[in-house]
Image (cartoon, rainbow, N blue to C red; front, top):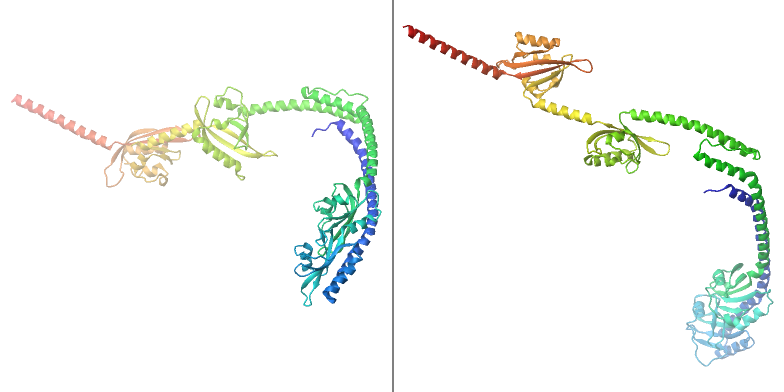
Length: 632
């Protein structure tokens, strides 16, 4: 990321002021918390005041349930019904109805009395009281005796054997709960609400007709207090969507037995608005101070820092195009920037000298590379190699006239029959961590279509960041041709019926063809390392044989015909023999021996000679006979 000096100066000014801004913000936060705690304390006092009559109502209602159950157990049906009416008559402003329910959910006794049968077995409170002992606090409902809304409380009636025998119930009027709330003076803008455990509103100080009996379990306030028992504070949105600071408590025995939620809340805006106004004022002041500090820092920094730095920046930009450019130092500059300018100028002088030496060394290096009998290259292991440097000999080797471009497309000139093999070997070399040396021989095709052989030798080098491949290509076309010619000549000599032997300076056999081995009946040349060991036993030691062996021993040229006894029981063979001499590069004498079996030719010549001799004798005898006849 590029950051200018101007930005740094501004940021420094901001960093200087930032601690004061943070300190001011922390003070505002503490003030906000103090204001919020003060409001919560006032709400908790109001909550405690309202809790007392509600708790008394719950306790007295539970006691009333016990009295109804006892009256039913101790009195006759008529007397218990009369007693219930008597008890409820004085409490009819508090309770909408009361009575007893049998184990099947049918109302047996009610206040006020009814002449028809009422079934409450489907009511949630009846199903709950069957499974729990003791009193339960039900939910908001419209009771079926008088059709009035209220909060139902019930208690199970046990039979003598301990089984469920029904229940006693009372329904508290919602108006009575509402009157309890309205009897208290709340803090300004505060609102108190009573809810059952399912979230239905039982009483509310603000707009009760709008909200009583509304099931709003999805409201933010009820989501946060639902399932919690005890007393606590929180901040949430009410059923009307207004953000408030609430305190609440759960009134009841336990959450399983049921109870009611009492909450008192005050709009958060009313509590926090003064603090927010103060925060806005202080924020504006802090912003103004920051702005003034930035302006002052900017003016100071521009004079002392920005102008000299800008001059140095321009000098550096000019230095890119002209390495001999130097910074003109002003006397008004600070000491540190003067030192920087002097150091820059000194760096330029030294860099110019280094560049001059580098260019000279590069020239010498290029000359040295051009004199190497081969083509140097460098490559990066990239699918499989990317040739990033190739020495200039490549142009002459491939017949390229244009300038070499990188990466060099070496794989394009490899002969198609060798390309797969070369790629496989290079890939193995690149990925084999233990492989350090690569040696390959393959064909390439130059620009004129001429096929040439190269020997590719390379090593892997780590340059501090990654591995690179460095190697050399050598033209070995001459060696391949020589090897081919040698193989061709050896094959021709092996197919010849004449024997050829190459002998070293010490008389040891360096090479012999198959014909010689057959002629001398020597199965393996390794067993007969010296030529004398082979020839001496079979050469007839007549005058010609002695001359031949002497010439072979003394290293002299010789040509003649010798007799050979390949086996003792066979007749002698006649060989034409020649010894040719030359001196090798190592200044050692070499002998090439030539053997040809001319036994049949000599035999034919002898037969011809005998035939000619007999013919001459016959001619002579005929002449003599004619002469004698004439004379007679």
